[in-house]
Image (cartoon, rainbow, N blue to C red):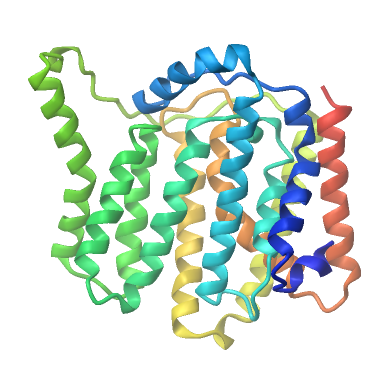
Length: 326
């Protein structure tokens, strides 16, 4: 399977669709109705409220939306990885890895606020990677800030991704205070319109600005899930090893983009510690950068048996979680 997605064949998106459906078949067989969490933003709560009448009559609407998000995120991030030449040659391993690791945990196959903002965060990473040769960086920075501001309406701790802008500007060599201020203005713009609307409709007193607290997240996972986490981390470490070994052979722009992926991963790991909850679904924010690392673990090894064993081991865990582990 890894050999199939190593190629850049035009029919691979169709194969990837079939691959994703087979991996996530259990989510269609047993649809889960998503529940709002305390840290979810008002836009996500409105979305679930609007979907509730349809969901009660047709519960498959939730896994259909979830799979559509996961598949489009996999394809779009894979395209960006190829466009920015993060790999030696174009392939579909990043998309395959994203669908594979998101199938390892049931919480990552349920419609959630972090799953939705993953789409925005992929777009943000792409725009940050393009700042290196962007003729109008200020416009892009404002749009990046605007996307971060909107994402906080789905899940407020995503405000932490403002750090991606700060470090991203350092990595891309755009170290200017005005650029940071423009990005900050973009983040604040959605709140300006929100508070203006609340004031004009006499709802300003009812609006409560989300607070921020830092604590350890708590979640209950089986021994199988912990083993799956270890496998994912092992694959990611192997991928990072090969990335670092081939780092100097890449173009400057590719190296800058890889640095942004590392920063992306670091910020994503930190987010669940803000306004921490007991659910595991918020760690799906790490899945995007991890899929790029794991794709490298599938691509670089000269011996084909290692990627093959790693892939089928992860597939075995998916099957176990989906049908045998409760």
